[in-house]
Image 1 (cartoon, helix red, strand yellow):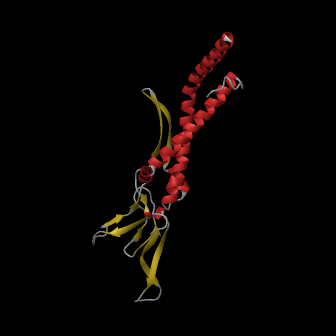
Image 2: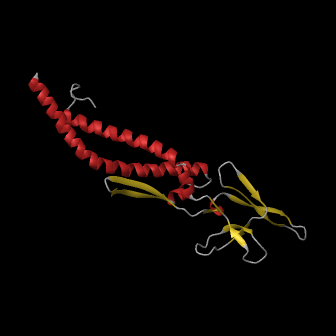
Length: 201
């Protein structure tokens, strides 16, 4: 019986030694997978709360691969911090009858920034060929001068990401932990065999 126990203990020690090596490599792999999954979850959640297309949100979330910082590995998702032009959200021009001549004229803009909440602003108008991007923006007058206006922006992808970060972190941590345990169990079972007396993880 003593020999049996000695052999069993040695098998366990050998298995744990291999697991220690796997943990160092496996942690980096799991972090890499986890941060990619975190990005996918963020795209789903952000595009579900803001009226933005998932593809647009995805372009503004960048995965940073795991790097060693001191004794720990860190991986993260970076998000664009600049506010999103209102023209990136659903929007429609408002028109009204022209009193002085036939036809209609511009009467503002209606649109949606947060899903399920529409705005209707008669003072909003479009500004084409914005400097730097050439995009069209939605603006509001701030005075009487030709350039007295402000181009309007909605929440940035970064702001939306920070708003949901805690929920994302908890969900992702649970999933990474489950995956890590699953891999450890699989490797451990291959190492010690299928004898139920030796498999205690």
